[in-house]
Length: 389
Image (cartoon, rainbow, N blue to C red):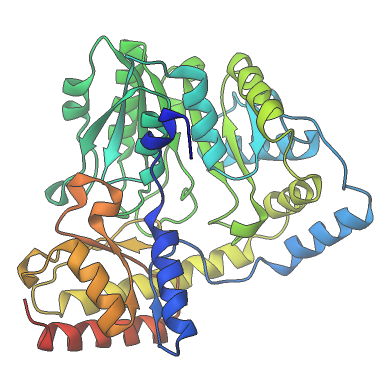
């Protein structure tokens, strides 16, 4: 097949590959505990589902404006101002997309050219590096280290910025580690990018999933003319299949992002957007309930991992992932990923799925029941007691 050369630069998201392997094992009768996929195991709250169904009946089945329906853009702006403690975001600063990934993809398509450099967290969400490479720019990793609780070192970031740096990507709370940046770090980040004239993509998709501390955003501190905040509904409202995300940005850049959307997807599904209005403006009880349950699961899996031989695990402050250090097991990250699935029936991801600095770690998603997490820990322990290194 004679594909364009840029296709060779396109990466993938390993979670979906491991999920497919796990499903194939289950089809053969094997029992698998799924801790690989970053998806809440809760159903979308009933009031949101009802709003989507009502929207279908009310005729929200046609094309809408490329930037999003006015009702949702206004609701997002109001929610953003309230939760982030700002007053400078209006509907004109909002573009709605079918998921969070188009925000990062379209932003990079709009900004990056060959010869540009983009700095991204490593370990980090793999699509950052994939999209940088696809656009022909140079991907520059910013290491996230366990000794710093997997928070980015802003001084180290400053040392990586060159005259070719066009974009910095930051994610807090963070996938895959659950690490977070402090308000002081976010202020320093915003001010640094502003002083260097560098664009900033701040991925805040886990902004509502915080167990210690409070969420903050560099939008409050940096140059909002060169910044995009990514957020969405998938994680907070268990709406992964609804495909609903958004970006906050300057009005000028919003027009460019909307034009890319016109060319790529036309618009986001109208009935999905009306469900999003209900998500933001309706009761938040289900979100609070999910967060309490996730915190309980976090504590179970962290304690359980730390009790295993050769495994140590920091307690994450946000998101729903743990990133245990497995170096003392004598097995590599990739080997453990493969053998835990094949021999123990535990699906997880190698830390190297999130970049070179993830070597020596595994990622487990604790978006599963306490009972299943405990079963996975039991299987992991039995594997370690019998595995040949």
